Image (cartoon, rainbow, N blue to C red; front, side, top):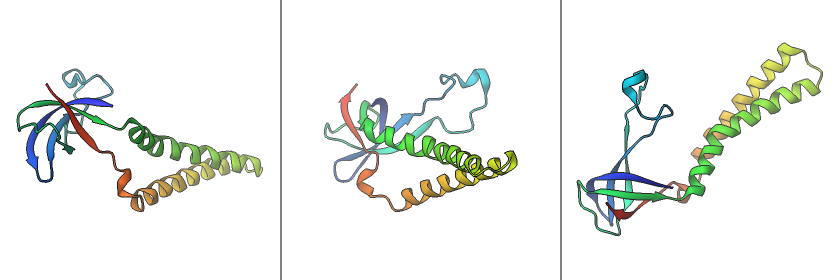
Length: 135
């Protein structure tokens, strides 16, 4: 996965801080809806093998597999637990109210699994960025 960024400062050990423009679901035209509540830039460290200098526009790359794994963990895992809670309650013969309560209990379990996996995960699984081209 590649993105354009701007080098904001140099860091030790061949790293650089880069500012990446965060894309939005609405296409980034915040003037049309004015509902964005987040900053539109994110700063992150990136490996700097090309010795890019502050102010230069660069192309950064991250490993797509790690990005997709994080997306599945955050978006899909809680939904799966939500549906499993509902299905388990329905299979047990609970009424509609019991199924709804069980589905939200499943969602809570999915959220707990997500938090625990993030707390005890290996730091080598972090999403890392590397400057691959100076634009």
